[in-house]
Length: 168
Image (cartoon, rainbow, N blue to C red; front, top):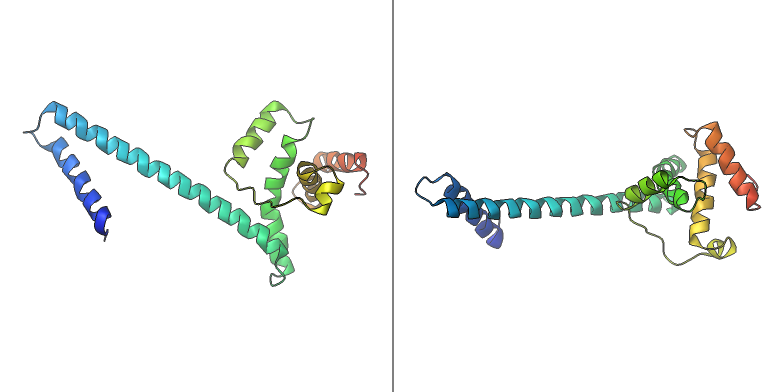
C-alpha cells in the first residue's frame, strides 16, 4: 500500500482519470487532466529507465568485483570475465583507428548504459600509455582467450598486441 505522499499522489491521479470520464466536466478540464497524466507517465518512464541503467551498472560492477575476489571460484571468475569482456571490447573499439565510425557510434551507444568503474590509473596504465591504451590491450587479450571470437578477430588482436611489443 502506498504511504504518505505516494497515497496522496495516487488519489490525485485517480481524480484526473475520473475527470476525463466525467460527462459533466469541460473539454478544457479533460485536456488538462490528459496533460497531467501524460506528464506523470513520462516521469515514471524516465525513473524506470534510470533505475534500469543503475541496475546494469551494478551488474557489471559485480562481475568486475567477482574477477578479483579471492572467495570466488575460478569457474565463477571465468564466467564473470566472459560477462565483462564485451564491455572491454566496446571500449577498445573506441580507440581503434581501424574501427569504422558506425562501429564507434555503436560502441558509444552501448557504453552509455554501462558504468565506468575504473579508479586511478595503475602502473600498467602508465607503462602502456594511459588507461585507454591499457583497456585496448586488455580487450585484445580477452579476445584471444574468448572461444566465441572469430579467427580473424584473434589474428587482429595478435597483430595489435605485437605492434605494442606484447607477446600473445
